[in-house]
Image 1 (spheres, rainbow, N blue to C red):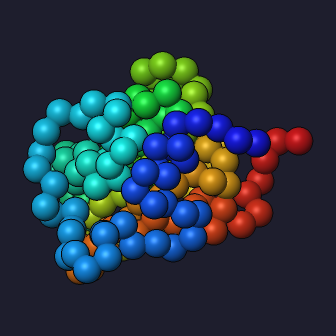
Image 2: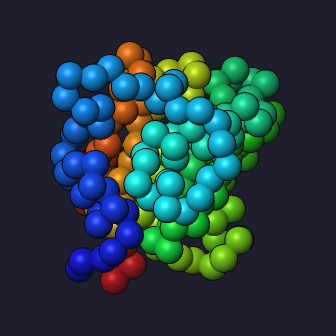
Amino acid sequence: RRRSGWRSSAATWGWVPRWRWLAPPGSRASADSVPPREAAATDVAADPAHLLELARQAARNAYAPYSKFPVGAAVLTASGRTATGCNVENASYGLTVCAERAAVFAAVAAGGAERLAAVAIHSPQARPCPPCGACRQVLAEFGGDDLAVVLEEADGLLRVVSLGQLLPEAFRHA
């Protein structure tokens, strides 16, 4: 299956479906250098650092009084729309909702079950902050194995990995 959107836009900045640093050769670009601004679909599709900035902003809204581990996530749909989410904890730990799932659910609530092209995840407590198993399965429901997962390394550089690498045999309805 070939689709437009993230993959075709990503070709302009050199994304490949393997682990890849997004900083240009010889530069020390980081996600911290991205100024906060309003998201435009074309901006986000062409700039994974901006998608990560949306996740960073969402993490500021996290409700994490028990774990003290705030997380924010931003998803990009195939049509270029974005949605954000943050983790919301509960005293009954099983009722806690992770940021990635909150972002997916917000995207669905805002416009239907559209295919996802990318997700960015940020936590000020841990870098990188890959999605948990439950979130990987929810992401697989709305994105394919080629879903781009944008993570921030401890040194601020960005890394993109495909969901297929994080969840190699995802359960899918037959």
